[in-house]
Length: 276
Image (cartoon, rainbow, N blue to C red; front, side, top):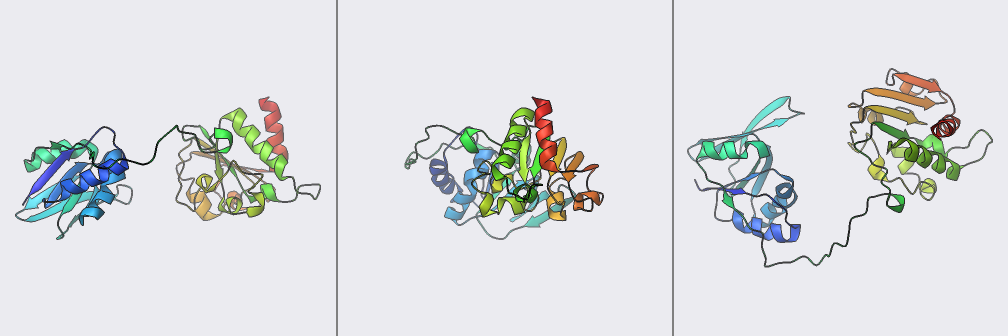
């Protein structure tokens, strides 16, 4: 069995890496590479171009003659799966920390792989600007608090009128003063009538139904109903609090540690005042 291993590290562009990786895959039955960000960005496209199969996050490989069997974790590392493929070439992307160990076990010496110079990118990167209004990102993974806004912010307020601009100002004011990260319910980001006022929010802020699972120490939901798909996105948040006028909303059904039955708009305005 022809086995090749490539120690791919450093930086490289997608346009240069894909043809180089695709060329490297050809002529081998098994191709081993470490699963760093560069490999995971470009190797799937290279495997497709080379007509190869590819599997990632592999933690072990066992050879039995011409048969290769690999192992990788599934279901959040609760199940260790074992499987094999008959198709060749087969690109096996290992866990980065186990790449050298697996190569040594198989008696393969990793080769260096230089990026292709035959193709250049037509894209010129002039700079990087954070997503969000005015270059200020509302998605802050390192923040201690996740502030989630629901559709209630777009409803009529106590005076019977809509105050979308005031709601947007209250939310952004709190984010600026607290340094919190912004989350959203699906119903809010899907509202076309709120798009102009809530321009700082997009589907990237949606928590739960997109599979987004933020990992902040604390979470504060405002005007959210606490539906199950939304709450699933909170499973890594330790302390959950919610503000809602409905005492029977989903957050009251054992999903929040503390539920404040109050007008979230008035509560957050007062919080902003206290924060100065």
